[in-house]
Image: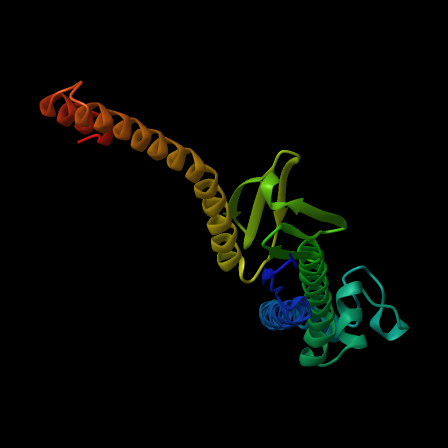
Length: 239
């Protein structure tokens, strides 16, 4: 008899998921850059103002705080910051944007790296259920289980479905239609169990019928009474 495929697993689009991770990482990186830049630039403006006050004081006096003459071309480090970047906005941008960009790049790279590793953990799961077996691939491991060897099926986190057999328990993660597969396999197991119990029931019913037939012959021949026959009939039929 030809093997019939009952259901196949459906996988999530990992590439699409990774694109979403990249978009989220980029958004968070931009937000971090904006927030850190704003806070840092405000702080740097205050820093620039304090340096500028020192610079004006030293320039008026003709000397720097460390003893170097302004006219001699040597300045203290506070004055040098004002001379090298005479505009407060430029100073804040030069010292504020670059660290913010660095932080944003680190956040972006970290989230993308972690997201990529997570996506790789859920790639490579395939599952097919037929009327004779369950086969597929769990990561790099090939799986082929006769239906008779399967003892149980269950679901778990990360949209996983696990199949238990005499050889162990095998889990398949990120299966989009795992609930449908679980129902199909459960129905197969129940059907197998009921099928195995049917011959025993039939055998018992046949035995009771033969026994009742014998007692009917004894009744017809006058060996037992009608009351005795009725009592035995109730006993055999469970009435």
